[in-house]
Length: 504
Image 1 (cartoon, rainbow, N blue to C red):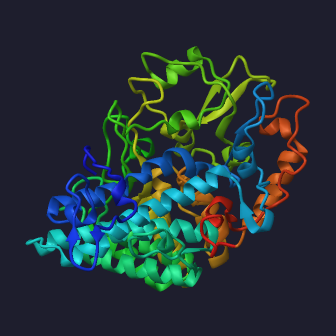
Image 2: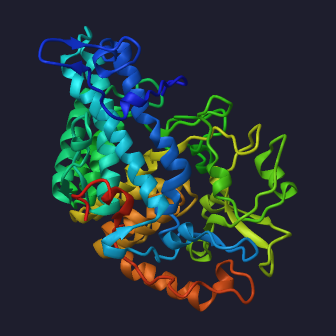
Image 3: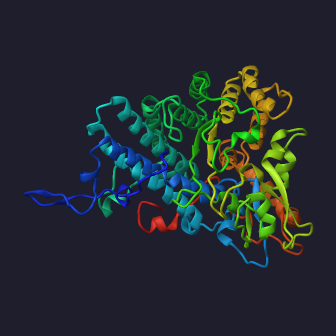
């Protein structure tokens, strides 16, 4: 993704020119789709804008809706600060859904950011075919990026809500914004169609500008869609093509698979990652801080962040690794020390004051809450694990083990001993939990394997039974409604229902 990304409000919603029965007049003082989408550069800027909401989603939202909603992480309760109810409702599966709708701000914002991607991609896709771009390959690559991004956003919508408004053309007036709800099958039809187009149109990694979607990324995303739908053979074909392409490989050391604040970005293991850039131009991330246990004094933060101006972190800490995840690492697994560190918080009311934190996303940078680490969406290790899963589900367990063991070998572990299909299925899920910890995969894995309800019920029972083990101070306990609303899908946002009568 280019460092300089132009974001114009007209890309979110189409603007029409002034019209009457005799003439069309294009305003000279305002950009619109009539005046802007003319050149190759215009369309490149349009697709750049469709990438932008990914930063908000991965910096501020997805960890709350995915990792903290799973059995991987929890929040560090600070009874002196008071409740941060909206985050806690997600972690505690206590989000109230009156009339089947959610008032949770984080659910709403994730919904809106995904539809912002969709709206911006729609602008490009509605006009690109008629665009006068002389190089057909360039034109196809621009279109492929828009198709990839729209499919990516809809894949999150359908996995979060199991339905969603089907908006496939630019919105030019208020009436058009209230699109009818599409079923999960209708949304998947759009996703698969878009990704088939993206696979054909996108450049491979060897030709693509780093940070942009590639044909390999589109194949991986489409394979992930097929895995969700249990279309194992289709997934196997695509994933073997990604492997055979030879553009991707495992980094020899697990900790080096993740970027620093200023380097190691889009490396050989990266299939697709969200781009952040340290500095004052508006592209920086702060997710490292969002993930920190709290309250943390600046002297405790400084050795981790390496900044020149560390500040105290107050409030409650989110996305703190739970003991159950930490104990799930096998003895000798090199990923454990690379993924999880420990910090002593002297002002915490927790008895021993020691908290785990997500070390894999902690890198030194210059200024407080301003870092440039990219967020991994698909890594080559996940390609191997998805392929192992697809093969095993087709009864090809021995072949599947060759791909699973590549991931285990890098982690310093012996080859898997799972030989039956059932045992191997468990082994793959365990491997995904460890390999992809904190990368916003776990909740989706629980839902698609049909284990979310039982896993989270057991998780909640452990927390309620021993809250001090899960970072509650002595005498504090979870709220009475904790783990009272465990369900596979989020309720649709109430604020959107007020705007769209089709949302019920």
